[in-house]
Length: 233
Image 1: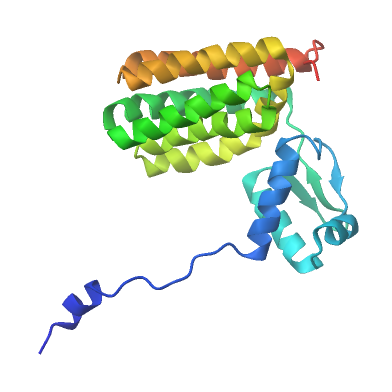
Image 2: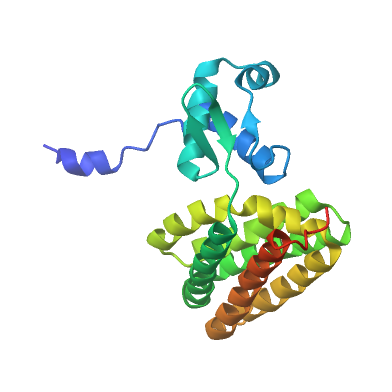
C-alpha cells in the first residue's frame, strides 16, 4: 500500500489566489495617499468614497483597518479615517531606520542575489531612467520604488523585508512628492545610478554606503521642508 505521506507530496496546490475586495480598495487608497490626492491630515469621506468606488461600507471599513495597520491612517470612533501626518521627529526616525535597513538589504543582495535577480533590478533601473527622461513621475516612481523593493527581496531575509515594507510605505508619499523638485529628482537619479552600479559589481560595502547616503538625503530634504524651506510642488 502506498505511503499516504508520499502521495500527499505530489498533490498540486489547486488554491486560487486572488485579492479580496477590501484588499483591492486598500491598495487604491494607498496609491491616492502616496500620490498626494489624499493629503496628510485629510479625513476620508466614507459616503463619497463608497459612491466613487461603487462599494458598500463594509469593504471600505475593512480597507481602513488595513491602512491603519500600515500606519497610513488613524481611526477614530464616529469620525472614520484620517490620513496620518508625520511630525519632523517621525520623519527623522523613520528615515534613519530605513537607511540602516536599505543598507543591510543592498549589502546582503550583493552577496546573495542570483544573476536573474540582478538582471531584474537592472531592468527596473532602466525603466526608472526612461521615466525620468520622459518626465513621467508616476512611471519613474513605480520603477524607482520597484528597484528598492527588488533589492530588498534579493537580500533573502524575511525579517528584513517585514520591517522594511511597513516603514517604507509610511514615507512613500514624501518620496513621491520630492520628485516635484527637479533638482532633488535629478540628484536622486544620480544616487540610483551609483548604488545600482555598485550592486551590479557585487561591491556590497560601496553599495551600502551609497544607498544610505541616498536615503539620508531624502530625510534631509523633507526635514528642510518642515523647517520652512518648503519643497517645490
